[in-house]
Length: 396
Ligand code: CTP
Ligand code: MG
Image (cartoon, rainbow, N blue to C red):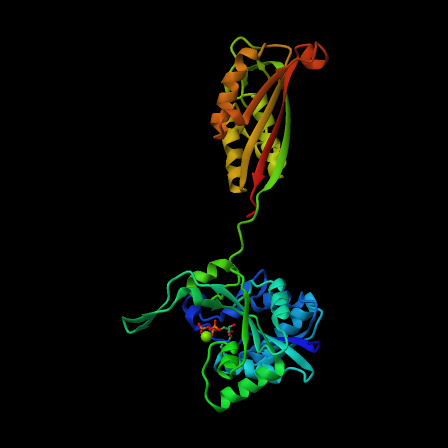
């Protein structure tokens, strides 16, 4: 068959089974990825190469507003084929009939799709198209049933259906357009009441074939289905921060490194407690956060920070990190000093920094080096430290 292929996208239902959860909003118009949900079906259909166009069927009382919305979506996202709007009817089958009336006369094959099933793939449509051979009255996607299905009346079981022969069917469903038009006319004349279009072909004695459906192609129907519409949690973004600090010797602050007193070491000049290593570390964390440097947050000119233990500054910076959604994964620290000798202190400093940052010891590394008697550290005029912090930041 080479006649043109169109799609009817049904978006005229009430969504009554979800009304309480959505505050009365119809499910096909719920926002999804920043657009009304039905637009996702339009986008997927637009990816089918042989498609000539679509008709979206809206609730009649919303037709004008929804047609304007559709126009705006078409301008923004250019689906590449005509997308028309039509008013629907009371029952699903009425909406299909009214959608059929809006199709162009040259339409030879028609897909009918529930916009409440936003997660089908273009490959499913290809499988349907391959199944529509001459003489076939319809091709529909179907999945095996996993529950045992019983016929009941009230609370009494009448019979058990043979599960092996049962299938749960989905949309899109594909039909020769003239055949679907005919059965819809007959359904109207003879008061048929059905839940899908293939049923009408069956009632009229036509042949309907199944192809494998898609497990992800669920129909959003009940409150528990709404969770599939919520976006996945944003992925954490890796980040790195670098810090550097220097303190001169000859001051009146006993040396503290990583919050650990270093007995017998030269005293340092400082406004705070002069912990050069924690200052470099704080700057590295602020670097990850894009929040400037320690001087901006704890200025020298502020008396509140006079001789303040740097562990307190670190805890405040860690609070900022938590608020910003930063999870620190590793810290690498280097102290550069000719004196004192630091190797006896490295393990203690590592354990203390890990404790202050609520990390495991293996997430913190402490190194010490001299500068071979070169420069100000080599002349024992002061001490410097560098820090590298890596982490994962989850955007708010
Ligand atoms: N539909 C339609 N016109 C109707 C009834 C239903 O276009 N008069 C559409 C719905 O918008 C939906 C699809 O047919 O995309 C499948 O119907 P269903 O899941 O039953 O949706 P609703 O009828 O909207 O929901 P409910 O039955 O809970 O009211
Ligand atoms: Mg319904």
